[in-house]
Structure formats: C-alpha cells, structure tokens
Length: 536
Image (cartoon, rainbow, N blue to C red; front, side, top):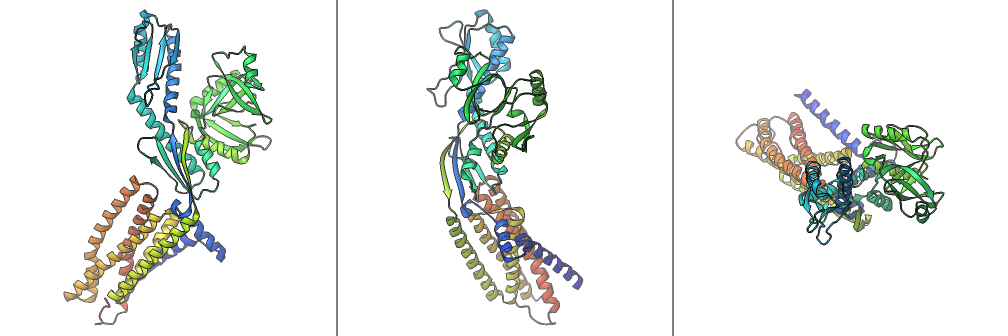
C-alpha cells in the first residue's frame, strides 16, 4: 500500500514541477522571472491590445482576371483552329449588380458558327454562347451566374488563407481571421500585440503578383518617351510598366506574356547577393523550372524584368540559363524589405485587391483593466468556494482546496506550454473550471457520506464513493468537452479562447478530483488511528 501511495505521490510531484517549469522556466533572477511570466502567458486582443481590421475583398477583380484569361485563351484557340474573326473584346453589363461578364466576338463567318459552338462547348464549360441580336456575324460568350458565384467565393477563401499565412509568418500570436458581415465579402482580422501597424497593413494588402518578363526595350525616362520610340503604339505582344533606377522613375517595354509567375514558386527566402546586399532567393516547381530554363537559355545576354504588382523591381542581364532556382537582386532592398518580399511571395498572391473599411487600435489600458477585473473576480470566486468547502466539509475541504489549486496550476501551465492565448472569455472559462472542479469534489464527498451513513467502514466508504462518483464525473466532463470542441470548431477569436481554457481545465479536473484527491484520502487513511472518524 505504501509503495503504491509513494508512486502516486511521485507522479503528482512530477506534474507539479513540470507545471512550475512551464510557467516560470529556470529564472536566474527576479527580472528574468518576470520576463518569463510575461512571455509565456500570451494574451488575446481584448487583454493585450492590438489591431482590429475590417477588410473588403474586391472579388470582382478575380472575376475580371478569369474573364481576361478566357478571352486570351479564346483568341489562341480560334487562331490555332483557323477560325477567322474581326475582333474579340470584353462587353460587360455593369448596369447589373453584380455585373454580368461577357465577351463579344465580332466578324465571325456564318459557315464557321458550328466550329465556334463546338470550341466553347468543349473548352469553356463555364460560359454560355449566344448570338448577338440583329448581327449575323456577332456572338456573345456570357459567364454563367453559378460560375461567377464560385469564383467570388473562392477569391474570398483564398484571400483568407493568404492573409493567414502572411500574418502567421510575422509571428503574431493567435490572430483571428474570419468572414465578417452578410455577403459583402468582408473579413475581420484581429492581431494581438502588433507593434508595427503600418508594416502589417502593407504586407496584408500587398497583392504580391510576381512575374518574370523579357525586356523588349528600355528603360526610358518617361512613359511618353517610351511610346514615342514606338510611334505612339506598342506592339500587340508588349506592355509598358514603370520601375525605378537610381531613385528616378523609368519605364520598360516588356513582353506581355510572363516567362513564369508567382504561381510557379515553391519557396522564397531572404538572402544575400555576391556583394553582401539583401536579396531574395526563390525556387520553382517542375513546370516552372522547365519553362524558365527554356526562356533564359534562349535569351542569354538580354534583360529579364522582375515585376511585382505591375512594377519592375529590377531588370538584370541573363548571364546563363536559370532552371529551378534563382535570386532577385538589385532592387535596393533593405533586410526588412527582403524579408517582407520573401514572406509575401511564399504566402502566394492575393486573388483580388483589398480595401480597408475600418481600423481600430485596442489600447493596452483596456486590456490591463480587463485583466485586473477578471483576476479579481477569479480570486474572489476561488476564495469563496474554498472557504465554503472548508466550512461544509471540514477536513475533507482541505483535500478539495488542494485539488482545486493544483487544477488551476495545471491549467495555467498547459496554456504556457502550448502557447495558448488567454482572452477575457478565456478567464470566464477558468472561473467555470473552478465551479466544475468543486462540483466533482462535491459528488465524491456526498457519495462517501452516503456510504458512511449506510454503515460501511471508512476505507470501504471512500473507495465506494470514488467508484460511484467516477461514472457521473466522466459523463459530465465528456459532454462539456464535446460542447467546447463544437465552440472551438465553429467559433472565432475569444470564443475559441473560452473553449480552449474550458477543455484544458476539465481534463486537469479529472486528474485532480479523481487521482490527486484519492491519493490525499489514502494518505490520511494510512495515518488515521483505528476507529477514528473521517472529517467530512
């Protein structure tokens, strides 16, 4: 019996030491103790302060990009199948909300109508093909309503995922990123403890569309100078984009079609070039590496522009063939800007632009006030409950109070170990855990009292009390944990904080009320004189 009791006591001691280590670590002085406590207990936005942003995703951008791609693809397919036409251009109906996206095909020979119908049916399943009224040579491709809805919803989901990756890479603890409003494609972003607000906003909003394009001509000192060099009209396969050189704005004539884009990236990391200046190293997937190797191998000695969000970052000379990896350099990077570019490239391009609808900075004074009131409420409730247990259950109340204190210690330590975030609802979860812990002890104690009233010996009454109460404790805890899991799955932000603290507290309560409390009772029984009453 003593060996078994000693083994259980060692288990409890190990748990207590692990909890203390999880909360304070191994501080060498008082200041390090304070720092450890501050760094290991993470606070949510409502307690720590930070940023609360409401964003709107301009989902029509994604639909427009899809339509532009479809129009370019249609031109290529009609050219490859030798289907003549006069012109293909967008013809959206913006009088509707949301707009109806259409592509107008002009000058199609009537004897090739069936070829166009077959082409659209086979390759453009998201589009309907209709005739233009009063025009025998005109056809209209109309984007299906269901397809447009799917594109908009996917743009919202992809934006959420991209923003989450960028925020996580910044090291923001437990951010909240979720849909907001009713069907307006809005997002709420909560960032606890953000110190550099402007940098975070810039990284979130940056589209980060990376393209590598061959330079046809330039740089020119102005847009007009570039156009004048080409007779005022650029070739169909070219486009004009701005950049910078020695602090001045310049313009480049580039290939319209990119050799590779950010979609072909598999990774990006900040690095240093041969001169020790900040740069960004990137790697490409198999298809991207194959295309990039072909383009760079065929154009050695020419200039290749690195374009980010329709602006030329740099345009270095292609010295040799580049395959699966390369370096973006010469963009006047700082160490921070190189890190930010690598971060946004790794997270992927946003499918649509983003507008900030509102921005709210939550001050730390609100958090300190919330913490103070929450802690006062928790301590007051704890002391009241512990006092009641001592008065009502006498000696056994000490047992319950020790288990309750250990329950709170385990809860706080687990939050520190897993990097959980304590929110104001989380503090409510802690207080609720106190109540559940007391409830478990009350069940056990009342069962023991009942067994004693039936005339059982003290040892047998304690064993029967724990055995009978265990089933009820398990039932109540499992159902409550199931509810907490649902809250965590479908809730956001503070609601998740409540679910996390409640779940950890309930699991800790099973350990303290059933295991620890039983060990304390067994220890008391081992030291109890024969015939003495149990103080309960």
